[in-house]
Amino acid sequence: MSYRVKYMDSTLSDMATIKEYLSQFYASTWQKVAEEIKKSAKILEALPYSFPFYNDSEEYRMIVVGNYIVLYKIIEDTNVVEIHAIWHGSMNIAELIKKLPDSAL
Image 1 (cartoon, rainbow, N blue to C red):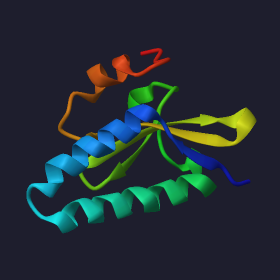
Image 2 (cartoon, rainbow, N blue to C red; image 1 turned 120 degrees about the vertical axis):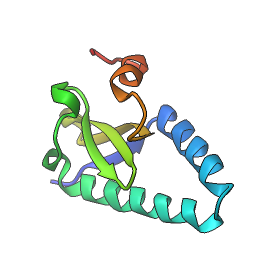
Image 3 (cartoon, rainbow, N blue to C red; image 1 turned 90 degrees about the horizontal axis):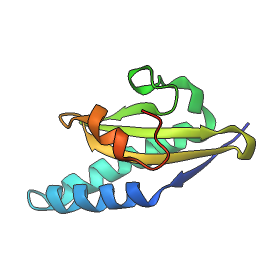
Image 4 (spheres, rainbow, N blue to C red; image 1 turned 60 degrees about the vertical axis):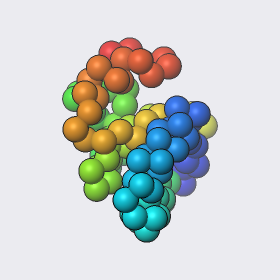
């Protein structure tokens, strides 16, 4: 079964922030990170259940992409994978996740 990946508005904002930060070093750095995120999204289209829940939340799953953690939900009845956040692994994700819309944590 194939799933459709949907980037939530919060994720698009995260990506813009990451791009702005990484672009101040080397232009190619952001391009490499973006490509890795796209590759991960492709994996999620086919195998969304392959990755663990974040901190046993049973709401958000995570996939690690380089230094970043991609948080996503699987919406089974519509075969959609919603990517809700892309955060650097050094951030306090347990606190940030509480601020995401519809978060039960």
